[in-house]
Amino acid sequence: MAEYKLLSNGILLDGARPESQENMDVLIKGKHIEAVGPHGTVKYPETAETVDCNGYVIMPGLIDAHLHLFGRKVMSHTVQICEDPILRGMRSVLDAWRLIDAGYTTVRDCTSGNGIPLRNFIAEGEMTGPRILACGLALSQTGGHGELMHSVPVEFSNRGLTCRLADGVSEVRKAAREQLRAGADFIKIYTSGGVMSEYGSSQECQYSLEEIQACAEEAHNRGVRTAAHAQGRLGIINAAKGGIDSIEHGVYMDDEGLELILKNKCFLVPTISIFNVMKNKGAACGMPDYKIRKAEQLIEVQLKSFRRAYKAGVVCGLGSDFLSDSSMTPMGGNIVEVVDYVERAGLSVGETVVCATGNNAKILGIEEITGTIETGKYADILVVEKEMLTNIRVIADRTRIMKIYKEGEDVPRLNIEKFRRFDCHELFQ
Ligand SMILES: [Zn+2]
Image: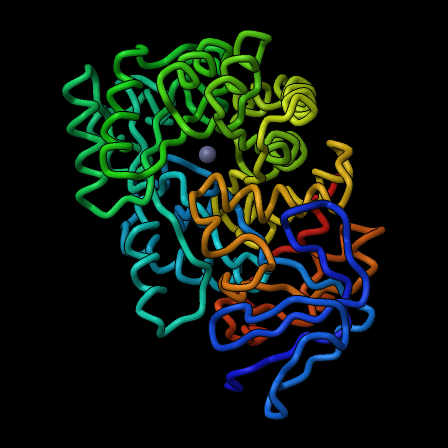
């Protein structure tokens, strides 16, 4: 691999601001960005490999701040509980390929059981895949959203590897410490009910403020972030009060919740596409009726909350909440979240890219190393046909992404079609 690569004369979307800059050069040296400047002004050695980016956008690699590397094949928690976890782990290796092939150079696994070992496997350097930040298992109260299935014996909850049950301040501390001991990059906690669980509504408040505070304290003592699944009004308020760093979903956000989020500088990862995907594809993919009905109720409320928070100045990221099954929420198809920010939430392409790159890096706490195209950062870069500036769906077409670099390495176009089994345009509805 050439030590120097010059991305020459492209349109730069740097991930820090929504405005693009024409005729820009980006010089990569090894794993890092060496220089950025107007075309012709960046000095480079003769040995540099030059990539003509005329007609292309140069932008940071995408980050998905909220997904689940469950390694599921079908959309069924019952099957998930019964399946061999090693089999699911193996599927998640293919998902890592699908993700980087779609342009994701970093993802945050918000509970799956596979995130930590998959992260470590990719870090060994023998397989290309996105950088992974993983929480281990998210903390859920008994009977809470994290269990997903409530009509099965409670010990099955842990077998599905969707959560770690913990009740009371001392158990919450122990559960958080267990995740940290296992190598978690952040701690996730469920502070409200949700769509995918059998019992309880999205509005249901879960965990007490004291338990949430204990969770945040344990994470912050280790110097890592916290994320709260918070859909209901009180779940959002308690998460923001309790010192949680990022609010995931944030559906029923009222004035009090928004004020607390702004005051405590919480981030928001709204996950706007998942409920719509469930509405459109859930029945065909075997999702029970009650879940689809719950999802439908949230679609418009959530879009409204997101737009309001975004306008109020909350730092918003972008996460798909895709679950990795091959039919409804396949990895790679999570690009629908990027498309929906433009087509359904009404953000500009530039604003969307900032949410998906620079803002997401801040939310994950990795803004010093990636997320924007700036000297000194890792060369996590996409080169995409410039039509993406007027038609965001271009970025969902792998054949229109000329280059994907992760830490300066030119990620080869994987012969992945046989693994793909979906057309992500089906998801744009
Ligand atoms: Zn989730």
